[in-house]
Image (cartoon, rainbow, N blue to C red; front, side):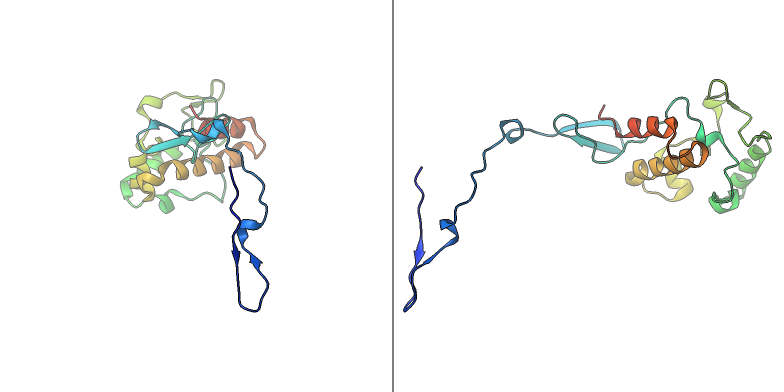
Length: 182
């Protein structure tokens, strides 16, 4: 390979080298990344995850419920969380939510949540607003389906932190699940 060196001749001025004359370090192509194509996987119809190479993370989290958490079943979360009237527009939703609140035990947990197994005893028949799904987030919170994963993950992270703490195993498990590439 030959290097072409260009010079520019200016009247009454010495010859000035161009940028091509300055020595640049040679960039060697990385064969591992040169032909790499991103892997596109879809585990949720509302989001595509793009990953490439080893140890890569998703471009955005994919929401999923994590076993042995139940942070959302702690219904009395304190004054920082909104009331039913602040969440719902439909009076029947407020009434349904408040009827469920009456089922809250003295410890603040939903009575349908079995703390020993950390499972909901009415999971298949739970109210619609206990379900974390794109259409429900769109209906209740006016969050577009394309923003569902990001918003649902954010809500769960805030709730897990409030219930179990910022350094909890539950938060660690949730973060690992939403950022996993499989």
